[in-house]
Length: 83
Image (cartoon, rainbow, N blue to C red):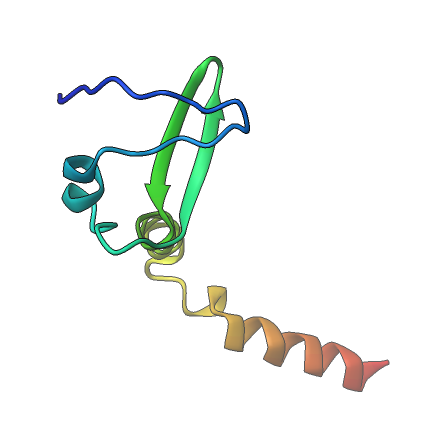
């Protein structure tokens, strides 16, 4: 685990050390997700959060062809036709 000391300005801005930004692919800037768990702040790239959500979705829907968005929409259309 790497650590670095940083300062939060009076306006609430935090500068992330260049070494840390580079390590997670933010050396040229980018969007992040800031999470608060208890008293811990975690900063992750949007790409990382999306990839994790996609992996969870794949795991939960594995082997279930009826769990796709297309299958859901098709079922809703069938229900609408029956009404």
